Length: 389
Ligand SMILES: *Cc1c(COP(=O)(O)O)cnc(C)c1O
Image (cartoon, helix red, strand yellow):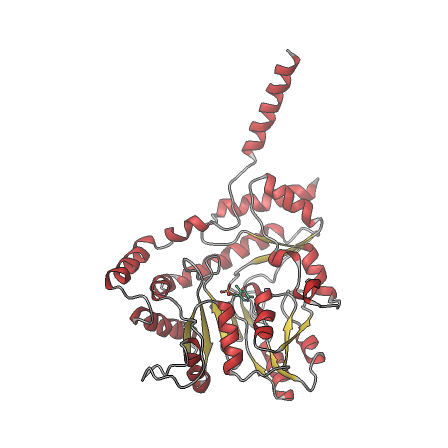
């Protein structure tokens, strides 16, 4: 009899818990096709019917439309964002042993691209907004430094005035890792448009995602554009088809380009929605002393952030993450909780205190087109309850 009573109790508890549960995954991969589904399917059907798979008009149109959207002269579709960085560095003339300064708070791909080109990634610390610290970049310059590689992290563009000043002073080139920053601006100028070249990733969970890997390189420099066109397509001159240089095969699939072109038309709504979710998180969480939020949308005149991620520093991060998971809320720790310099297996032996703090405390909260206002309010409520205990 006692055991039945216990069972009843636990059932009741369960059903109470049920009421406090809500399915808010960090990202809903199965919903990607639901975004502008009719448009996207029509474009795919059309490409398939034409058998137009490699370097066809959909790619050319998408490159043109994206260039126009960004206000950057050239956009070149490539196989993924990592290739975009490698191609940009090679086109900009990176040589064996060249030092490239970049933040440790980035995807391993940024540093790996440098390494794969024979360069030396020099890692520096970030600021409280999680973006690269220009003062740390300036301090890291040596006689071997050739490039600065700011990362426009989480959909926010770094202070490019300061970074351009360092580049100018030491005669360095800037290659931007703007993988996360499509449509983000600093002083009204687009991420990806500040240096010799920038890039974008179309990985499915990125702000503009395709159904697989994809990427693009951006540049305002005609000669860079020409060199990068050669590098992405076996060194073939796009006009004559004749091989004039060494190159790779790193083309953006025409099918992906067609899908991305359909999604790009709705992209302004995506930026708006992400900023409005960030505003909701800001309103719901800013009074908690245990959290450090990213700058609120519109709070700084120089920055237009598009919130690829909403990365927040929390006290008792791991307990909070588990608490949110128990309520059905998915979160993610960026880069698995390690800055590039914390991958000891890669031979780094240094300390970057702000990056290490950020890595130990941060969680990314759900922010995308599949998250409703009610979802956001639920996440806020769960976090507030956790700290009120
Ligand atoms: C996603 C990402 C990349 C790499 O893009 P892929 O398309 O996955 O190769 C590079 N840097 C940053 C900061 C990224 O977020």
